[in-house]
Amino acid sequence: MLFKFKSKAAGDLIMLEPNGRRVLEIIGKDPGPKGIILPGEMPAAISSLEAAIAKEEADQQAIADEAKAKGDTPPRFDVVSLRQRAVPFLDMLRRCQKAGKEIVWGV
Image (tube, rainbow, N blue to C red; front, side, top):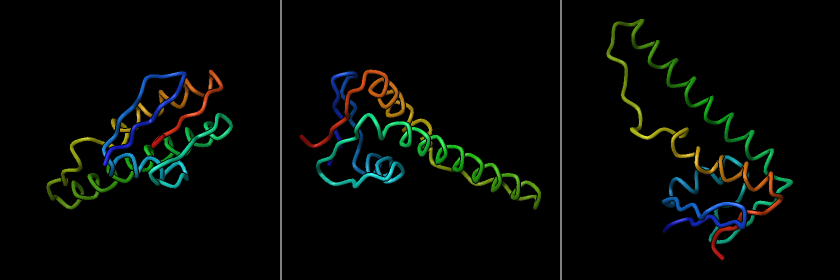
């Protein structure tokens, strides 16, 4: 399954199901087959995504630092980080917030 996010203020954004589900859960939306993000909800969604990105990066850095301190090889993390997956969605949220337009999926 794919998530196809649409808005009148930005181009369509397509995400694979696991990635779209994760982003929607982070911003507190039900990752169902249909949904909407209203302009008034966008500032909180942007903050939630930015906080999740910062937490993931801090957690990974702490794990790497701990491994180095023990003399172990630092673990390898996902090739594509949450930051890389979420930046297009953050851009869409910001554009839509500025234009006062909602984002929908599954319609």
